[in-house]
Length: 167
Image: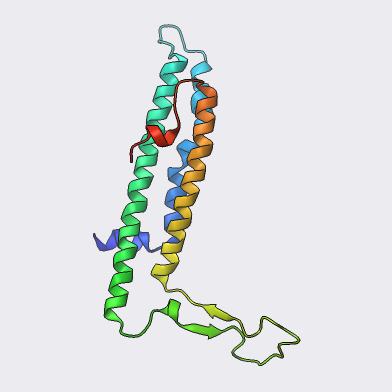
């Protein structure tokens, strides 16, 4: 994979921004479905509700596929970066290094029972990996909500999206 894509996937802000923009189809699904009800000028063929539903579903699945591919590519990049970090470093990764949360001052456990807790520091690839896992969970929630809107607007036309969508 090229270095540009590696840099983009390793940037959490960019990653979230790309996904936010790619989720626009999900955010505007109700508008897309309602556009079939608008009046068309004379001479234009009016799209039926069934055609509109099929077109919206097609666009929806294209958007989902695009996001799936992006997330999978980024996961591959992060995994390879983590493997590379493990192979090049004989010392433990940052996630295995534990730092006391109050390293500068000693506080009595009576005053602060959490003073001796250990904080875990993550390496940048590990942070991105956690964000990617979170975004995959968000994808499932968004798809469930979007599919609910679609099936409410197009009753009886579609099964569960998990049965219909092929990634």
